[in-house]
Image (tube, rainbow, N blue to C red):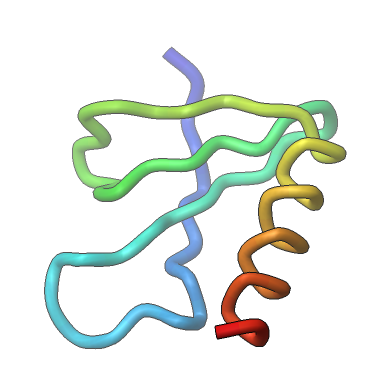
Length: 62
């Protein structure tokens, strides 16, 4: 199992409801808890950029 260097979202408030990401050269890994991660979603950099772009536009439109 690969070792990930998890980074907590800058939008995370105090508590357990946080998103953590780990970036590798080809992929982005996303989980809700880094230690130990229960579920890890792995996606491409392009797909992750599209997700972040959509989330930002949906937030500013509301």
